[in-house]
View 1 (spheres, rainbow, N blue to C red):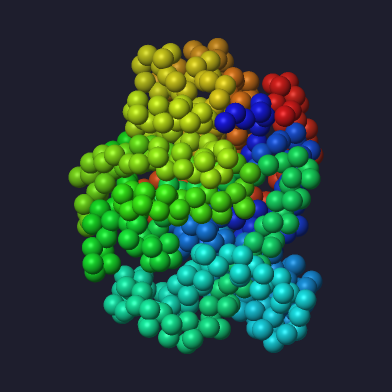
View 2 (cartoon, rainbow, N blue to C red; view 1 turned 180 degrees about the vertical axis):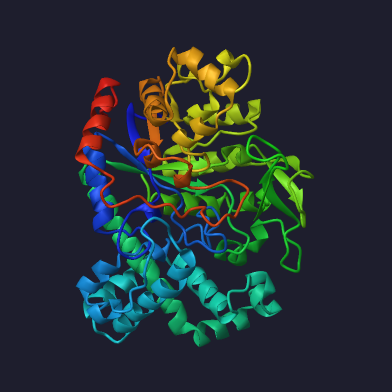
Length: 502
């Protein structure tokens, strides 16, 4: 797969401004797309859009197929009659700069409950047929997900492995009784998904009409406490008590001396092969309902996974175990007629990973913040002149510090290397733009810059610090007046000057 020479911006929708404490799929999202178009950008990259749980990480969602109902635009529900002005009378004092996910869990779910209650009472009858068609069209994942979330609520949020054995192990009689007992609650969950997909589909159409594609993100692993694992446990490495035998992570690396213990269950590739990798095909098909192009997080896990015996306190005791990613991806390509995929090939990359990426013709990634470390840095693959055309270059990602923050904390060796390479001595307030110019001017077909770098923000705007569950992870939001016409014009000029008009 090749990508046309162009550029884009990385921004998760939760970071959009707005009056309800978190970014929504409404007016501010459309304004951001308008700004991207004015700035000459052809891509909007987002993080995974799934419903988040403990830790609020979009990479640990309750479903690989569902959307995050926190993003539903409540103003649109008011316009449709699903909410009224009185519903907004008790609006909390939201923080305009940070998402309070705990507050969202309580307040927004209450708002969505009210919307569903009005729908169920027949106050907005025009939606009934559309909702029924949605439930039927998405039944292969939605039925399990809706029941899963209803059961979680019934169990006070407990993980499925802690439920009664008959529910944990999906006894047919117990599931039938639960579906009857929790029919209203499950419909409420499904209705929230209907609202999300309806609004996201409209927003994606708005972007497409303005020449902006959406780049999404598939986490290679699914969350331990997810409807995917509960519904299809045989495809994962579990014991008969609902506990994983091994979990995913990565060995010690740039981010952590003890590695990263993610805790995700690992796949039984032999079992998945028996169905022709049907679950993976459905997963990619579902993602293409949301995105135009898909970034696969931790692509190297399709060659081999770092398997850590469960339980464990760190990732140090793991080992690399071969995976059947090549066979699976070839099955997906055959079903889809292509692979619109970006391979996140960062970290411990071995020749088999590179061969898998290149044999499938997938663009990999490069991060310029990683280009200037070490003594003899001239051989660094991430230096602009070493990049390939079929590649996506970033100044940084959601897991990196902002570029301004990176420069402020850079070692003297890194600063020296940058000065030697560029023949310049940037100030902290000019570094992020200079790194952006290097990314746009490189050979890589696609250049993507986090919005924080275009806004020249420091470490306080960092999206995530890997290996931590800090209170500021995933919470950053930009301000109402940050996206100015002047910044759009500056970015558009750079885009044209570097041949990235698309």
